[in-house]
Image 1 (cartoon, rainbow, N blue to C red):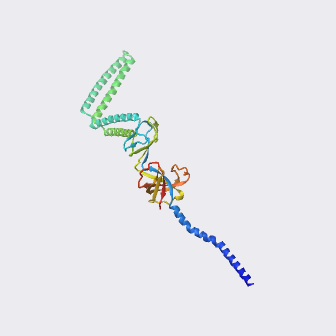
Image 2: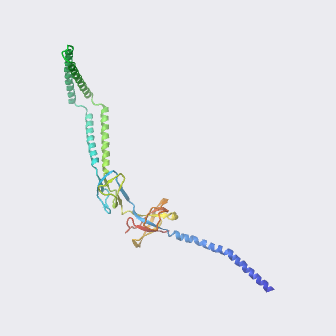
Image 3: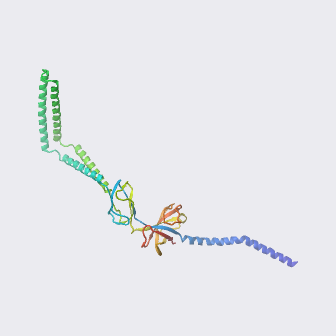
Length: 342
């Protein structure tokens, strides 16, 4: 009987222990896993990778500033260029004609202004007096003739037509006399201040027009804005272009950087100044070292194309710039892999 009770007690104890393990065991294992999670996450964070592209810091697209015909493109893809070197010439015949016409108009207005500022010469006044005397003599003769014709007309000795003809000559002579007197009065009085100011305004207008056309003429020759290399050419000579049409693309191969994009899930895990390791398929045994020097403040649709068939552009990403200690061997447009180190 006693042994039976002891056996029953052992069974009860075993059942209690089994039930306790059944309930508490998963909780113990869960806590253990939870303690491991942060370590796993930190390991994952320290191994952030991204794809990037080598590009030039100076990447300039040369566009047309005029609407016209390209007469000459002096460079081709791959050619080196110097700052200030002529690259593209446009047909400038029309604008050159406009410049010459404006130059002639400016010279004419400047000469007129100088004449007014000098004032009228004594010789001019004497000539004006002589013109008045001559016009007065002509008028007196015309008046005498009209009066004679009028007396004859009263006696029916001449026709009405002859009288009207004499009257017309007298009127013309009077107009010429008045004009000569007005000119003499003007010369005697001298040049008015208003006339000089008006002449100055005309000179200033012609000068501004000439400056405008000369400035416009400069747009018909495009000079290189940098020392660099022609990476692309979009147009050929004899093509007609509109304002803003791209013609050439220039880069400076001596000023390179790496542009990469962090996927939205990795935003905030990389900071300015973080070290990186960069590798490329072109030089499998080389590792380039550098740092993140700029992180864009916005997250937007991914745009960087790295020729990776598995890469998707239908995600959001944050742009970053990376500078390397040494870019030896790397060329603009090469795709690289970036490892961000913590």
